Image 1 (tube, one colour):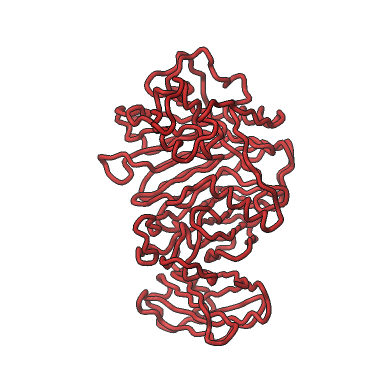
Image 2: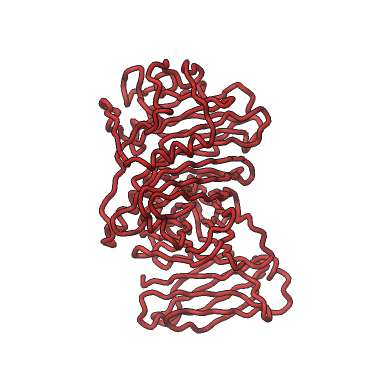
Length: 531
């Protein structure tokens, strides 16, 4: 399975360099919190697992907001932590040889149906984060040392305070079996986080924020400086995690209420305090990997029919329209904007759930979650921005999507918004219409033309007596040979047509089904680019 998180940053930098839009960007390791009230207690004894420090500090959600407010009022700094060899330049294998001791899992044996395990600092994860445990209104800071981690032979012996810092944590619970605690949430790498629903494997990721993504001057990667994890009470279904976010443009407070299940839910409350004007910011950003599928005209020499964590962008816009945009691995960087007001939801979906669509015995892409963003309240005017980055291997996350407000964020201001993240098998918004079950693209019989085949399935077409009408539009080129027929294999409808671009290098296509005067399907949208 490919590694999420920092790989996406690397491939984005590469793609934007090809596009002459940005120079390489690399986060410098940072350490510590710019707040005396939350400064590290140097006098406290070490011990992150079962041995608490002597001192603790009062905690509240408002304290994290106040910390972010004070942080934003100061100049952004990037302090570094000096590490001895080999911890300053760990290889991938060395990093994996630093292992958390399972017996030291937070709250192990306390019958909470929940445990926390910690990740060490090192390798690509070079940004130290503070981790605090909250109980009865008091917070105590954990220390990364030999009490929590073992150093394998690839690393060698180290001092008692090695590996010197945390890079994140993961949450375990009985999501799949009542008698076993499986990992279902990870926070690690800048502001990246991942989760799964029941029976799923990790796939697409979320982030705290996206700033200046695919823009000149380079992307800014905000990072979580610290986490405060509230100890749940016995029988509590979810867990609350607070996070302090920082970057050169802003600081922010995040609150995550996480509930595992068939669909794992995260209710996210965000308060931002800006240092600068921010013209290009993305709320609720998602990242994923898409290499190839039958929807992709640019063929790759791979024995697997499809290779992707997500196969499309789903949108439920403010006017009540459902959109489906198949993801594509174009030859060049592509940026698409879907103008909207008060969106009801958007996300990266994995609709193809058949193993034979992938034929991958190791990755099992059919088990990757659909990640759906459900805004709370009115988000106003803006665009859902989709970025598709060309790649030739599957180890990189090359898809990004987020909500971009129409108005730039102003310096010295506060911004509040909330949303829910759904990690499950399908888009959770109920829909009685037809959805796009598959998109297939290939060479048409007519020279220079492309054949499109779209399958629609769902209640609106399952028992439809009369054949629906295909409404097909394009902004360039010519379409022909439009055929609408039943597809009994899926109890649905198949639409096929040919596109002749007539010399255009980019064509935007849109297709939907109508029964009489009513739209009965999602609007299928596709960006064709010259292969």
